[in-house]
Structure formats: structure tokens, C-alpha cells
Length: 301
Image 1 (cartoon, one colour):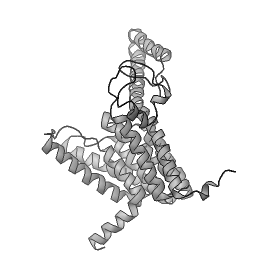
Image 2 (cartoon, one colour; image 1 turned 120 degrees about the vertical axis):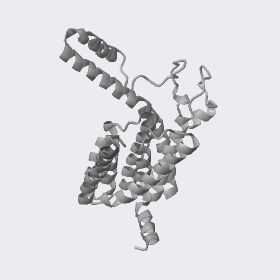
Image 3 (cartoon, helix red, strand yellow; image 1 turned 180 degrees about the horizontal axis):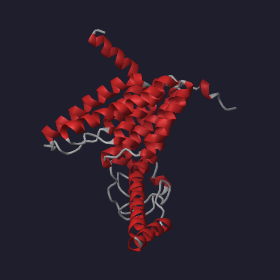
Image 4 (tube, one colour; image 1 turned 90 degrees about the vertical axis):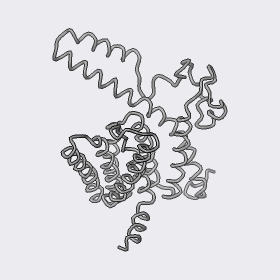
């Protein structure tokens, strides 16, 4: 007879979450690499189609060829199967076990011995560790399940933004609506706080963006940052926004100054802000109330 899941020791849930997190982390590596490429191809096809409509038959042929090529060789999150980018040998199932396969293969392709980027096992390990912390902190249940989804979205957005300075609407917008939806049932906050949080999250950075642009005639951040903070507000409520903005700004400023001093990073070179928002949002998910209370005590309020 199978044991009642509710009667299992908490440690079992934490270990199970870590294993699930590692498996999801392997899929997140696919999302991080393929989603930006999919979007770039989609944008190119749309541009070619627009030029074909506006300029006549001279542009229509390349557009048709591009669409036909995409139809012959689909590229999405499930196709083509994973393969070595160097020798193009298919990755067999036992070579794709999260973290363990990397260690077993000693970080090299089993076919051509090309070094496998350390990024892949690190994302898997990060996903596993964060999943375990979410279940440990929130406890087994629907709240932890929702927290895991948000955590994995944060990880995907972080690495995509680091690589491409892009926070795809394909992730932010569904999670915005999902946050508003789950809080109809009071999972993290009440529906009113969730709605105000989404509005305040977007408008706060939107205001900063346009104010900075008017003063400097430069763009200080992208619209994806507005949407990500709206996601955090929708999930955690407007009450979490001050600590998220404070933490992300402090860490972002510290990292930016360090890059300028240590690596002689140009002040004009953009630094993605999404990873700091995602990190601060995840901390607020687990310890937001504690951080807020500690700050209030420190400030004597």
C-alpha cells in the first residue's frame, strides 16, 4: 500500500524537490538557449513578410524561402533533439542525466571529447538547490508548487537576460496573468494587493525609465524590466515591491561599480537589470517579510 504523501517526512519532500529541480533545470537549459533563437527567427520572418507586403514581389521570395526552410527544419523547445553543437552527435538519454552525466563524462562530449560548457550543470544544480529551498521554506503544498514555478521562471529569465539582454514576453506575460490568477485564491496575497502590485510594479520602473530618458536622452533599462517587476508585484503583492526594488538596486549598483573598477567596464555599456530583479524577487518570495521587519527594526520604525 502506498503511503499517504502528507505523512511523508519533510526531508523526503525537500530531496524530491531537489531531484525535480535538477530535471527541470535540464529543460531550462533548453529554454535559455532555444527561446531567444526562436524569437529572433520569428522576428526575422515577420520583418520579411512585412517588407514583402510593402515592397512587392522582390522581397516576397526570400520571405517564402525562410518560411519554407523553417517548415522543413522546425526549431522549437522539443525539436530537434539535443545534440553536440560541435560534432552534432545525438545526446543519448544516459548522457543527459542532470549533473551526474556531466561528472561521469568529465565535462566532455562522449563522441568528440569537446568540452561541455560548465553553464549546463550549474543551471541544473542551481535549479535543484532553489527548489529544495522553496519546499524547505514554504513547506509541502500548493504554495510551494506555485513558488517552484516562479523560481524556475526567474532562473530562465536571469540567464536569457545575461546572454541577450532580453526578458521575453513569452515568459513574463503568462506569469503575470498566472500570478493574478493564483492570488484570486489568496496563495501569496489577496487579489487586491496582487492587482495593485502588478500595476505599481510596471508603473514604477516605467516612470523611472521615462524620467531618466528625459534628463539624459538615454534609455536606462528595457520594457522587459517593467514587466518582470509587474510579475513580482502580481505574485507577491505591492507590499513586496519596496524590498525588491531596494535589494535589486543595491546589488545592481554594487556589481556595476565593481565591473567598472575591476574590469574597466565602460559606463556606456549596458548591464542587464533583470537578474537583480529576479534574484530580489526570489528572496522576497521566501524571506520578504523577515527582510522588511529587519529593515524596519534597523531604521527604528
